[in-house]
Image 1 (cartoon, rainbow, N blue to C red):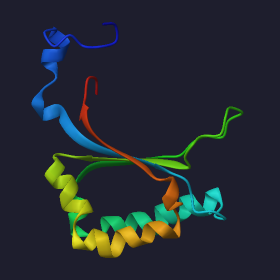
Image 2: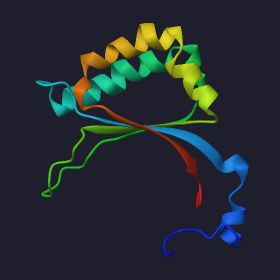
Image 3: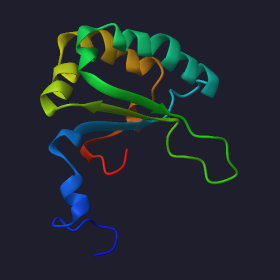
Image 4: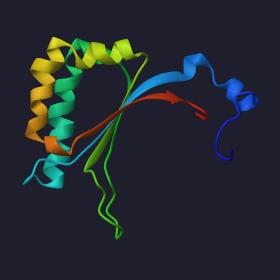
Length: 130
């Protein structure tokens, strides 16, 4: 089928087990009444340092925040998309289920995120080209 890798192909065999990662993708809108600038500033200056201050954040292999660019196209469904990579499901759970995350980081989300807008996907990412 076009667009898919044949498991027997050379390309598919080159994808090594070490290239597998667990990735959490979160999309969300800012809290109602909060400007785009205030949302981004809060995310960068207050929330990110709060997250990375807990020891369990060391489980994160890579962390990316994407913000939509201004465009004449249809408005994007989110004000931000966060991608966080982990070596394993255990590492991911070690962060999100930790007492530090639950007590210190998670309650802060309501300060800048419309919690009703959050969508989440946990995925197994396979790097094909890096």
